[in-house]
Length: 115
Image (cartoon, rainbow, N blue to C red; front, side):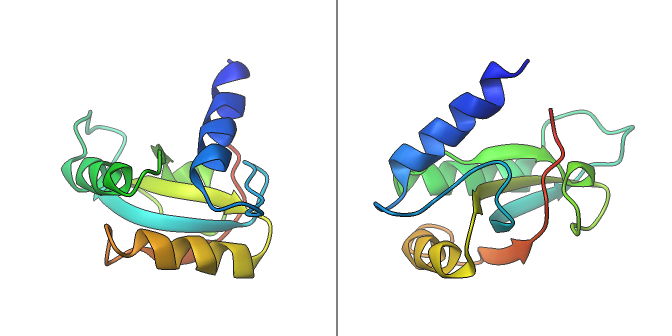
């Protein structure tokens, strides 16, 4: 379904500071949390879900997906992310804002190949 990625990008763009360029083709991602997710393990993913709830308290709607869909991410995880940002500077500005609600959030560079 092509509408879902576009809807995620729109939600993320509306929730970030003005000027922060986000797109699923962006190369900078804020990783909010992750849970082990070998293919044999169905949902729930408690750590990733907790990180998503924390981000929502900051007014940000995160995206969750399997790390295998992200170039450069560790395998066998379900990750909760915000992004992708086109520049590191934009990602760092958003990260500073999100750390109020998700103190362990960090940046990761990589492409998204989902959907």
